[in-house]
Image 1 (cartoon, rainbow, N blue to C red):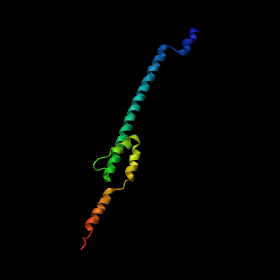
Image 2: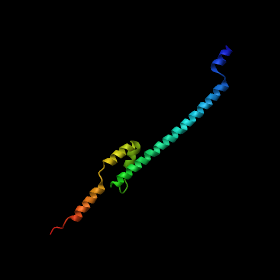
Image 3: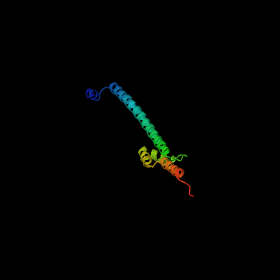
Image 4: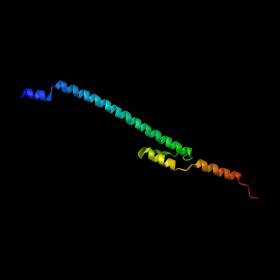
Length: 109
């Protein structure tokens, strides 16, 4: 019976070597998963920043106050901030048109 157990379960040296090889491969996999997680987080934050910059270029949030957009972007998704930003009308065009109409109007006589 002793022979059956040693051949069935294998020697302890062989099973220890395979366990250390498996843990090494698992460690590399975990390392790459952590690196990918940080890259995704960096892309997430950069995309929020770019959408906020686009909102500022449209004429909104010129004096700060972008905390709400950061909150929405971090806890919802940057896609929500992008949809919000693209739905905003361009205030620069409206301000330019108002300025033109004021300058071109003739004063009342």
